[in-house]
Amino acid sequence: MKPQRVTHGPVSEVLVSAARSTKRGFAVARDREGELRLEVFVDGDLLLRCPLTNKGTAFTRAERADLGLEGLLPPRIESLETQATRAYAAYLEATTPIAKSRFLRQLQDRNEVLFYFLLTRHLRDMLPIVYTPTVGEAVERFSSMFETARGMSVTRDDSDDVASVVATYPCEDARMIVATDSSAILGIGDQGYNGLALPIGKLALYTVGGGVSPFRTVPAVLDVGTDREDLLEDPLYLGVQRKRLRGDAYLAFVASFVDAVHRRWPRAIIQWEDLAKDAAFTVLDAFRDVVPSFNDDIQGTGAVALAGLLSACRQQGRRLSDERFLVLGAGAGGIGVARAIRGALRRDGLGDDETRARIFVLDSKGLLVEGRTMEPYKRDFAQPLDSLRDWTTAGSVPSLQEVVDHAGITALLGLSGQAGAFSEEVVRSVAKNSARPIVFALSNPTTSCEAHPADLLAWTSGRALVATGSPFEPVELDGTTHVIGQGNNAFIFPGLGFGAILAGARSITDHMVESAALALADYTSERWHEHGLLYPPIEDLREASVRVAVSVARAAISDGVAQAAGLPDDLEGYVRAKAWRPRYLPFERAATGGER
Image 1 (cartoon, one colour):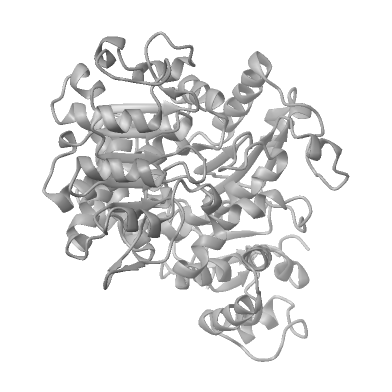
Image 2 (tube, one colour):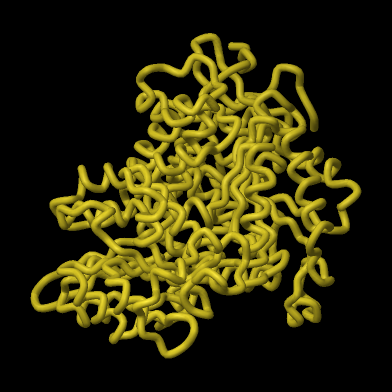
């Protein structure tokens, strides 16, 4: 039966972004009964070499005969489930996290659907491999382990021709772009071109967590150079071996990228990832109203921390305004968390002075205090000198311990990237201020964590409400098992992005981001309050993301930035129907004969 071309269709069903283009040799079509199939314009070995069309041993006998695949595959026809069983057995044979990471990347580059099916089935096992903490090592070794091209590389050498680079990328309808300049990757800093590994990993979570079609996503690296001498001298390094662009030249380069993206993919959302702190705030402020965009390090981290704090308060029967917060680290993540807390306190009715008196932010020099030299983005959180007049301090700027003691801190949040920054003395002091002290050591990777959960619980006799950025095993203490919540941005950004996509948001508002945090906190409280969890288990990622996406879409409608027509009242049903899930479509040779 001759297929009909798809003119519209849910994200869940559209297998490829080139749904109405034969440029890549295939297009999604519907038969007269409305069933989806993949209409292909190439055959034989070419189908097996493209990860978007390779079904491997799952090609049916009829497809093999029709598409020139006879003799190219083992004779047995297998299901996707059987293929996943074999792939998982091979995955288990990898003996180190980086070897497991490499196996999954190779699988993704061979068979996209099988990769996502396997990742969905074994998410708890594989999330630390695809994302933090293993992604840090994958970034560092990206050039040395390079095998197959993936993602879009835009370099400083393309400054006069960025539009052409974007125009030739093989994706006709991108909806989600994760872009980094690799200047501040996790806790390992400037990684140049190698930072591309992080957007690749993040977008995998957009698919398994949020339901964004992987064939509508683009991982992108803006290679503006690197200041790392070892990379500049490394003969195996694949990036631009020149010092980083900075200042106006850097901003002009980013502007050309944003313009090119918006012209080619007007419905795409950009998630800015791992930009150095100055650039992170500058780029977000400059372009958030030009193209729908957000910064995960600022807004995603702020939202996931806020969700955990709300869960912790509900565990105690307290309000957020009952706590006094110390944020250690004043980079993108730390200021993002401080902003999120400030917004929630204002929503609870606190004025500016009351809010400021509850949030204390420290950078490497100590407490942010008025009159100190500091970057502009920190100034909103500088404490008035008058408020500290009764404090006794050893130096001109209060230290971490001094702030805990004088400010009566009850909630300690680490985003400093400094391993061991939360000492026993500091934590015991916080525990004196609260029956259930809140201690979130959120820095990634694991080696940068401010304190280990086992120590935090031991120092507080098991009273602390603990969360970390990287995964930790449960802690046994005095006969009680303490499950350690993972304040993972993956609980926020997939649902935030998917909700914005479905709403057709023309911008990502602060209300949308805060709504994501509140939705995650509500989901955790409803499902896991009785278990004492601050965040859901990772197996709940898709369900939590549904709740987040619905809340974000509603906020976009409320804020007047939703442009999608005909959004139904049943937004939850709509989100579930649109969510992409890995499955093989039937293949059929295009009626025109196509390209060979």
